[in-house]
Length: 586
Image (cartoon, rainbow, N blue to C red; front, side, top):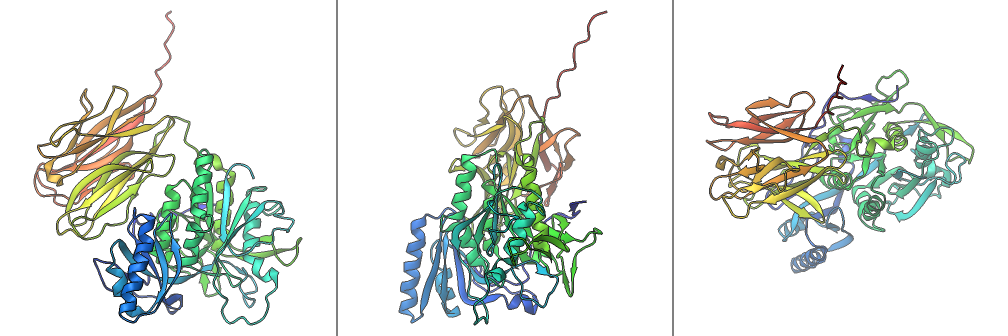
């Protein structure tokens, strides 16, 4: 057996083991319990300053200038180490901890995160040694070096120009090249090796973010996604040039929980990449680590030949609800960097993740749009918004998916509704935090089927219907810009319109696909009938505002504040079954 699927569900958000974060709405340091090992990964005095999503690139330099001026007036020294654009807008700065309050109050700053280390997740059997580190779908390996002349991978590894690695710890002697290439060469062999590879002959593109000790930084990994070519834009360009294929990004490392690293991975997935990461080798909950804790990536744990969890001395594979599947990671034989014909055995969740990446590359048809007439949908949750009344949360679908529904969820019920917007040709589900609210989530319902096309139509004036154009388009969801108690609800009449009360602006989501059928269900708790797929899950309340309705599997449930007249509203769609063949008359 190659893979063991994990029965748990990865959480939409997780509690970090440790985190030092500042945000304008909560100007404080957050620390939770952590091990001494993870505390040692911190990089005091080095901070990632992340600006709000959608901030123009020019604001990065403007924010830097303002921070320099404020710091100079108070006698603080700072050094800008890196600027970021693409997935995230922001910069990396070295400065005193005492200057943090100056940075967090600047316009456009969303949060500040302390930089930290990331580590390769495999080791040779001899643990006393230093940890060493074409056609169709492309595999991008973010690791250390690779011995590209090894016979297992020769001619199939492209070493990119990107190189962003930290200094090595306590090393004063010149290190042999083979000691720097070990981890990356072994993983490249697992993916594409002539004899040991899962996807023999596949092309691998190396982006170097780990040094010879198998160590990197969160800021360096983010740079690997956002600068140089930039890497992230390079992947986007590749996907646009060949939209049928998928780019597979292999991240065989983990660090402490990092909001920035998770956000970068989430955006890469949204662009159409398949991101696969190691769960970690610490025999702990994978939700305490990044990027393993990000719900949108595929997190891989390791098992041995007996399908038991891999063990490494005092360590072993990480586990928990953030692990999506388990793959072979114990005593894996692959290319060795000791010579061009050498092989070695290594173990770790890096090897397990490489197995998953190779299988994804080999079975690339799995990432194309289904052509079997089946409607496939998933729910994509955003991060929670800020706490101010004007704060929003945004959720998007991946490239190749269509948004058939958009909802919001507020833990305390304080939400103002949702709208549909378009940015760079992609539809966005935007949720609004309510007065005195504690944040809101946006939930996009993203679907794929051959020929599916969706559009959003707004009501001409507040209080007027939002209507689908043409009989071929089905109303699959509706949104409104007012408290949920104002009762915007889908109406599947002949007009396929969204009926609302006075003063409410609504948006109708209208979709077309060959033989698409949709129906409306209303109750507090419901599920779509067999053969139908949930495309929208919302709530209607005549009384106090509800928290929102939460999709689960193929069902929908209204949460909180449920009174008489409060119902969940689900839209279920399917591809119409073919008409039975006509029987010939006797």
